[in-house]
Image (cartoon, rainbow, N blue to C red; front, side):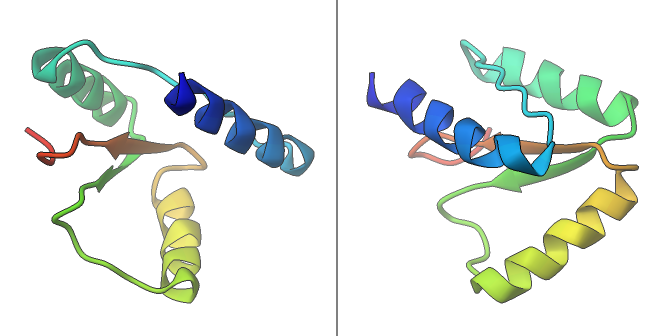
Length: 87
C-alpha cells in the first residue's frame, strides 16, 4: 500500500547520508506504548509526532533534530500516531 511505499521512498533518500533507519509497525496502542518504553529504556531520544501537536518550520525542525540526536547519543525514535493522535 501507499504507506509502505512512502516509508521505502524516505529510507532510500536517507541512504546516502549513512543513517541507519529501522521502521517498526505496531498493531495497537498497547504495543506502541511498549515500543516507546523500550526505546526510552535504551536512552533513545523519543520524538512523538501527532496531528494535534506543535507545528514548526523546517528550519526549527532541523535545529531540533540535531539537538535530539545529541540528547539521544545519535539514537532517535520518531513515534507517528494515527489520525486521532497518540494514545
